[in-house]
Length: 527
Image (cartoon, rainbow, N blue to C red; front, side, top):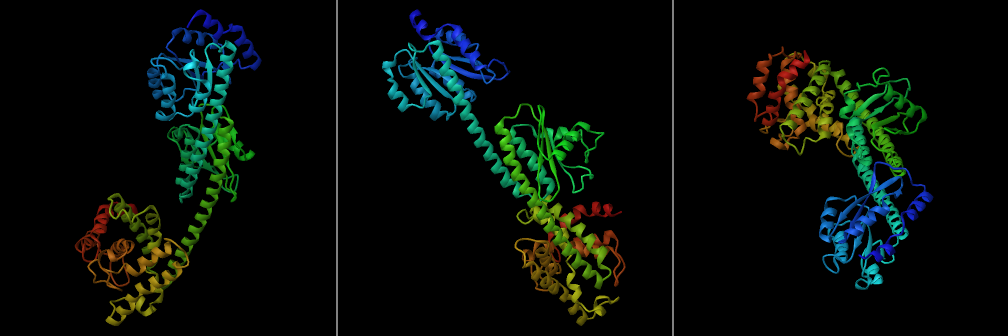
């Protein structure tokens, strides 16, 4: 590049400074706009840096990165995806090195965001019209026409275009995160798991650390304590299970202000998000942030909150439905207890032991396809219904203190079929797995034997529902170690030996193995 070219390419610094003063973008912040200068002439690098050194855009200064060949530039671009503008020479190691680099940037590196200003000292080799049509560039300048003013204008225009593109990309990515989060949140059936998912997805949406946030909920009465549902690791060190004004007054104050104002609080170092729900139970999320939120961030938060609020309402309705099912189960169990006064404590112990055995089976990875989270959640409550069919048994048989004769045994054994029918009729009114449908399996199948010699259908092995095979062990063990109208309690050792001896005949061997692993800790928990 000649001295004459320099005079044509760059004007005096004063022009740049005057334009900058008019734009009033004079505040310097720590963040910078990365500008990559790609040219094989060192003078171009030094002059560009000198004349644009004082420029600020959106309160940010420019960061200059130099590459003296297309190959060097590609290496830099492979490592840095944050470069905003490339000032690219056409003729370097080859006559079309710059044009080839444009293709590589867009196609090989798949970088559609960076703005490219093509600069050439030999426009005849790359006609402007053809280049503009054939290459994805932002601007095309001949070095002979690129004065300091035009350099400034091209740079600011490119930065503004880059900013708009990144804003659109942020919005697109943010909406994708919201949609992904919505799908995930709608699958949650536990309020605690749901709260953890909310904290996780909002942290991802804003690019903040999950460990510095928490979610809490307030009951209908504003005087109730705020219960923390989910908490990041760092915040967990500072918070107890309930927010306490003395223990954490600053966070408590932020949460209270959000609840009173029923709105979000956006502060320099934190955000406090208020979730509106239709069931009068307010939820609040608080998290530290390390950057100022943009308008796009705030708009995405609003969209996210609308989805979360819907999920909160759905989860509340699900909880109410689950509670109504539980109430039905308890009512049926109470009905059975009315006929058999020995049933009450027995079914509660069976519920607990059934859950412990099932959890151990899952830990041992036995029947992984069957033991889902829903199965584990439901089987304990469903096990309460295992003897509900006893309501159909005459009192003289059900409450007989001694052994049953053959005819009485037949009548007693019918309680399994009766219980299954009662619960199946009710379960058919609701789709999917419920306490009633699982209870039906248990009621009709918990007297089946693994070798096929049980009743009422003589099912064998895995023909017997897993739920019934689990409850069979829990039911028999509890009946053995506790007093019944017809027998005295057995010792733990004798009862455990009985279960162990019948592994593979009366009981599923995998269930017996799980039972033997937890029986001692289970009995200790009852003391």
